[in-house]
Length: 439
Image 1 (cartoon, rainbow, N blue to C red):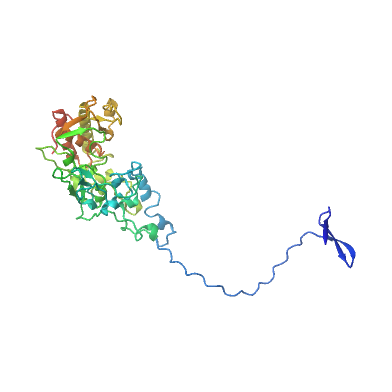
Image 2: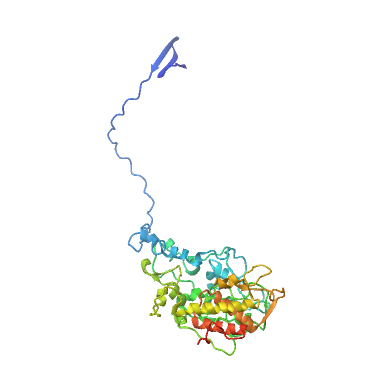
């Protein structure tokens, strides 16, 4: 059978052989007709196989709904201005010195730095003495060469990051992302913060015996683990101190050393005290992490201090900044006096490469004390500078106060005492910025 298509549309021609006679058939097709009405429904089909067992219902959220409801996902973390947004405005959310690499940096800058230390995990040099109180924050030990050194980071983090799990011990039983709900009080910190729990700063009582000393700041014990000098000043300052690097001295952020009234270099023949600030039950947390009423009274994770807290004690103060009773102005002026004195004897720089020029007039006027570094060499002559203990101690005290960046707020009594003694040591005369040594 063969078909032959004609030129006209809707016509199909074919030639068929039937009983030997050739027939030509032409079929014509029209347009589709209208659709008819649906027929009656058929009988039901047989029962299908049983479906798999259902999953467990979604857990309830604080508002009585489930995880998909607004409060289940957002309170108190993911609301606008909640914990996550607060954290983004804190210094903890900023890049943490980029690459960590080896050494001790990861102890604080690694996302699991505290987790490693509280689990007593660390790296030390061969033939070293065993570190003590590492799970309580202590990092100094006697290395294989007999010198005081710092434990190394034992984790695998390579890029610095401070996140929720750095300070909080989240796991499958209390992580809202795993349980589907937030339960107040379950985001416990990694560091013991009970009334009898302690954390350690590095300053020891005996040269060459790095035992540190304890502080007890409740929930703020977690802050102590990182916000300290990293240097055991008792062994770090010796009879002769070679200033051969811009990195000499305490690490940035040594707030606990200042707040505790214990971490500076103490000159012989004088005593040191502390202000009432050092008696706050939860120390740093009390001022930096006040409850946020709009967020269920969860602590403020921006960690920005609020002058309203200060007015709880300083009831007569009506200002809006932290220069209460002119205290910050006094400390700033004294710190500037010490800065100028140290710069005058060739000990400060902001240059990161030779010739390590001294601070300029502009540097001395900008108030950015924390940017100052130690100047290698002796007054620019190229030789390494060696300082006796008192002069090195004065330089150390300048750096520990400058790098705390509080200008006396943390412990005004202690900071002014350190400044008075250090200025006297470098200049040889009493400070011009303070009438007498603070008591």
